[in-house]
Length: 640
Image (cartoon, rainbow, N blue to C red; front, side, top):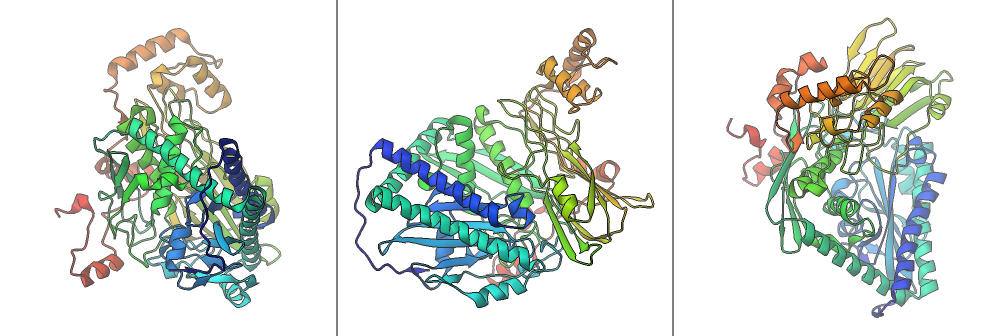
């Protein structure tokens, strides 16, 4: 554990801070977070950070409890794993998820933590992580889908002091920059993240100067306490004590095995909410493991509850002791090191569907369909016409689920602040043309509130190169709720310049392309919410006119569109009456076919072979065997 060196050990006194000052300080923390983002996005040069905004800041108190941020605080896990002294002017760095309790989830995310001192006493911490474009490993962009352990995925940086008492450790930086195919991008992004942390630290010191350090520390504690009370009241008033269960799936592991189950039980005991992931499958031998950080999960749960019930609550870490998360060792969400992690985005995204399912099962007001629970990756690398090596990395967008308040947005990111990279930017800097970038009609699940549509991106390659794809939901469906239908699945089609067509798996590396080849990259839609036959006719007509729903797709809502593009009211009334009579009972969740049925129809529907049963991870097998414990196997196959 890190040893914090303070030259002033006088305890901080407790001061009663008036409500107005408390609100001003609370907003000052939020503004400092925004400024950290602004510094990062204006000074980084890689498209993944500068354009798509894959970086996340946090400000904490001296104990590492988050006061402003999005992913939860990484500080405690980091400090617990750093063996050394931490003084004023130091900055810590790691990219090893196993060394910070999953505060970052794969090696591309480089996490910086900076202590903030005031007159010799630790005042708080600033931290930020950003996605580095390439950190060596088996493939360009350092996310090989065929990896079987962490060391195949790139350089692993343990918790180190990258800045010591204000002095940059240039040898460490030089070593890190040698282990990348994009040293210019990585170095610029490195200093952008570092500058963002320093900006947050400067804002904390300014707050201490303005309000007084004693007042600021007391305000921090009061903000945490205020949040705890608000969230405690929310948990007690909205969460039942009866246990609810929800399960969802990762389609495959890029090695032909799957699907992998994510299963969780939730219940309330007093004012505490408990989540038990014992139903989750054992860790994969492949790359789809996700080391779920408990604080991150608690933050996701809190944000979900606040969005539904009380958006006025400003989240911080005050309530985290009110949520108990239990994740058995050796499962997909708590893998044993050095299990591969770079495909973790699929489970990370699916966690949001699990939260929706659990809260919706416990309380109908929380019921939201499954959505675009992933961040599909597309990578293209090679040498351009000037013989310079290039790397294009993009995060895809898809359909957000239908919800009680309305339709899900079309073509949106999993993360609210992510942006798409403009096509003009991509075509200007990379040897590629984008012929289509459009909403895919009818991919959103039908419902009273429609699920958002997925996106079709059609890439045409100008030079020979190599592509990689990370995606999911090609086998299972993004489910609907309250009678809403599931959204459509994802699909990837490679069309060679000679006309040959090949359906690609959702997770694949080392696909070589030639000039004129094109990739049609379809993402999936969000599930629908509510009975499609209750959807307003004007809304369906608008969707058809806007190209979001086809005239044929309108029939899923029982709506008949005439040849001139308007609603045929009489035919619609007749069709809706027929559909009400013939349809099955409306269920709370509409998952589509069972796993067995999906496997049976897999090749016919997708053009891909179905995945076979998951196998035990060699890493987990060795770990459990050394302890004389039975090796966990997927529960649904335990009898075999």
